[in-house]
Length: 270
Image 1 (cartoon, helix red, strand yellow):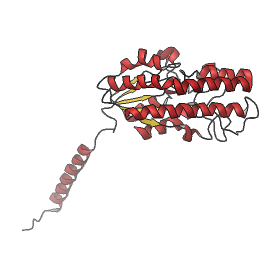
Image 2 (tube, rainbow, N blue to C red):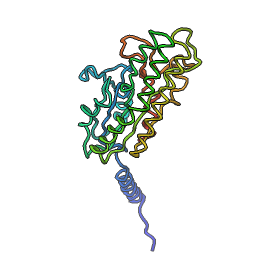
Image 3 (cartoon, one colour):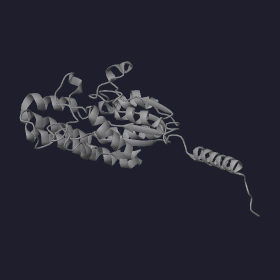
Image 4 (tube, helix red, strand yellow):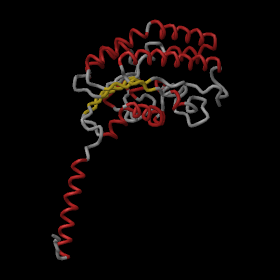
């Protein structure tokens, strides 16, 4: 049997059907894919966003920035909650003493970069800049010895605590970029020998970190390749500060380094 509808009733019927269809479509579409995500950002200055400006005044000397990759990601994904615990100068001990308490069984996403301060990154760079190649190589060797022999246990303690305090979380651990492109465009500054040694220490730190991360099934975000050509002395726009004022921003990512370097690597591992 065929139904014959008047033009007016046909339009009304079509509109009603279309309305129901659209309603069903929009009901089926979930909210922003990060809705329900409870995100905690842990770590040191690279996670806090030191060097990228736009610091959150309430964060004080932690220098947390609204340009940090963690802050940018949560703002773009409408997460249910965001705790920004990363702090400039943080070591593994600081994470255990002051940041782990931000985690709970309801935490679903964690990010962290840690280890550079334990290995004496800041003092090593100071030696390399002020005291010449020989002293630089000695300082880097000391840092590498620490990275290979002492740091693994400290990272293990941090990752174990994260897993214990946030058993339901997906954890993304990020490393550090090479600071220098070698050979690069710089005409002055420390020697290429020193620059290569510093980059080598970053490689050692990445290797040790990745090995520890794998024990816990966390995701490892390696930023070295995406920063390539954007390092100090790089042939592209530099995403890292050299020696600068304020001094605490020296050898840290710029806002472009956070948004163009760290953010896409983090996003790919979430």
